[in-house]
Length: 259
Image (cartoon, rainbow, N blue to C red; front, side, top):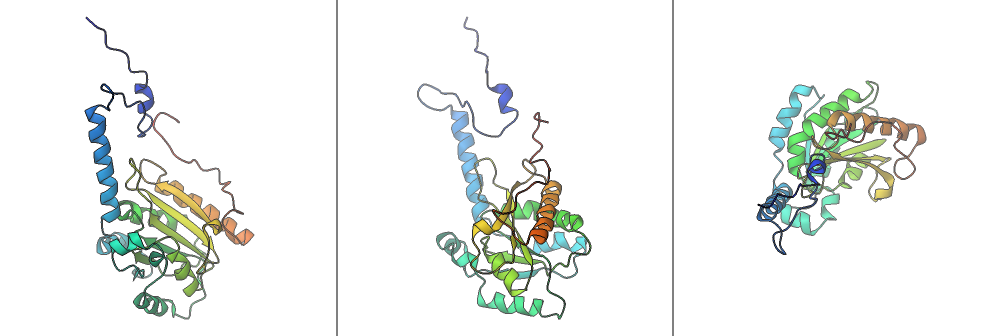
């Protein structure tokens, strides 16, 4: 009788969802691994194409006591198909949204220190599941003296659309909370992009990114505290991006078994 070989990788699989030591059957992968890959791929595709339910998101945000309901905007990408084929259109607001944003910002109040923008990005699922909790955590972590602009939600949004929002509202900084490109083990990931002095044409080198915000990655409270630390440093230094390093000392993640 043949003794089954001990799986030397089993203890490592407890600490990561990554596909490691998948094994083989002959020259092929085991059927279980093929099916798991197909499921993960389908979940990633679904996350990209799932529409953002803005009504449900606003309903979740309402109990948090925001000064006013979110301003609902849309990029120049008319639908998901165009959004995926034309990234440039996802970086600018359509004409109706420009007018709506102008009305929301015409209050006579001082220019905001920070504007929070929410975008579906490449994973509306991530925003649907974690967006409200993350925004609530950010608001709690911010100093009460920080002047927040209107909360803005943009559909068919790329990261750079927040630059136009921030510029039109005269904001000193903008933080874009956006669904990240799904991975094969992370269809619900959210990212935060902080930009000082936002304006159309800003490059990615002018932003700081906080990535992998989700239960299996960076929790919302830690991500919110990291954003606030970066925001306060950006005010002190007058910049974001490659010139601003994260020395907050906050943990990147709390992975089971690695504490």
